[in-house]
Image (cartoon, rainbow over all chains, first blue to last red; front, side):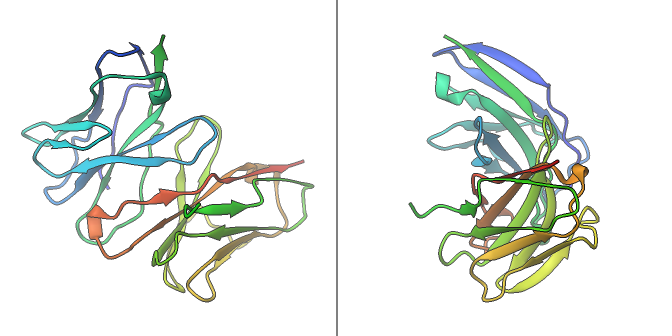
Length: 111
Length: 116
């Protein structure tokens, strides 16, 4: 799996958009980009994934750079419940199913 | 609640004792994963099962660790002769298992182990 790099921490005001960056410069052409988040005292939960095109779901949007060496998770309107550690990871299309987590980005939401 | 469940939620033991954790995955999920998480770090992969077959083990899984999934349903993770370095959160996750890189993993709440 490609190595990912994320900022250690970020802050955002409540009800404002949040852009969480991730670098994955060694990603291969068939690796998918996955984002998980971990709320305090809970196990991680899936947020979103993508390959090349930008993706939207009920939780967030994923913007993938054209060269795929970076991506950005977008929370359109942050709430206090979005305070968590956000992990960016990659998954191979060839059966390497285990998730490899870095240290993630700790997102603090300011009321 | 049909999510992944783990028991116990907390375990305190003395160095040298054996401990066993249980994970009940989401019904009909074929894949089951174990991860370990220490304070301030992301989860680290330990091992995973496809039904009852253990398909991959991390080098983190020393000989003192053993995992089973005897009937392809629940799984147990046993640590023998615990050491203080084993203190961590042990997370279990499950997935449908036939979706390749689309396979979303559902995590349980974890078992926090403290070795005194």
